[in-house]
Every structure is written in structure tokens, then in C-alpha cells.
Image (tube, rainbow, N blue to C red):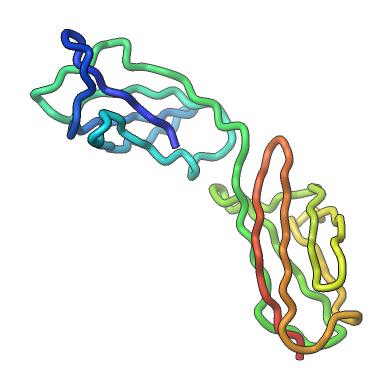
Length: 168
């Protein structure tokens, strides 16, 4: 979450209820968000949906009664992304469970990363393939519901997801 504080230049008090336009630019593409300051004079913009990279931010007022200084520009670097995990709900005994790990923003596979998979019996360290998948052999797992947790904590990505697969 990116926090933007809005102060009155003369009285040094924080302003409440001010609508802001936040223009976020990366390369040739840009998006405009709106945010409103709360009772503490701080507007919040959710940057969890931004992909990894550098962004130029320009802040302007959406209220005609409030004037923002020309210095309301900054740069933001998103260093870590989040991931989503796609796993089947049911598989047959002796089939492999294929779990896909994708970037939450771009929906591209997370390739060649070492992830940790906590199974009902032990924790495994597995490397994703070129499609961002890992495969779990079900031969040694019990029939019925099996709970798994998959996690990764690297310089680029961070996630901790739980999922359940029913083995028939």
C-alpha cells in the first residue's frame, strides 16, 4: 500500500476528505487511480496489483477547491510480486497432482523457482518447470482429503498458499 499524506502548506495540518488523482506510469502505459484522504489526512493506493518494475507517480487534486503543489511527483519501485496457485480439487490414486504457480498480476508462469511444498507427511523443496508447474506423486498419499501448503520467499516473489486435494 502506497500512502500519500496531504498537508495544508500554511497551517501544516493534515487535510481530510481530499480526492486525489494518482497517475501511475510505467514505460508507455499508464493508469489513473483515485484516492481520498481519511481522517488522518492519508490517502492509500493499493500497489499489490502492480507487477515488478519501476513506476513514475504524479499526484494531482480531483477537488477544485484544493491545489496540489507541482512537486507532487515521485518514483516507486516494486521489488516483490505475489503469486496465485492453481491446483485440481480431485485426482485419482496414482495420478500426479499438477500445481501451477502464476504471477498474480501478469498471469505468467513462475519458471525455474524453488518452492517449498508441505505435504501431510513431509516438506519438500521442488523447482518449478518451464510452465511454472510442479507435479506431486499421489502413490504414497492417503485416499481422501489431503491438505497442502506451498510457499516461496525469494527476492522477487513472496507467497504462502494452502490448498486441499481429494484423492479417490
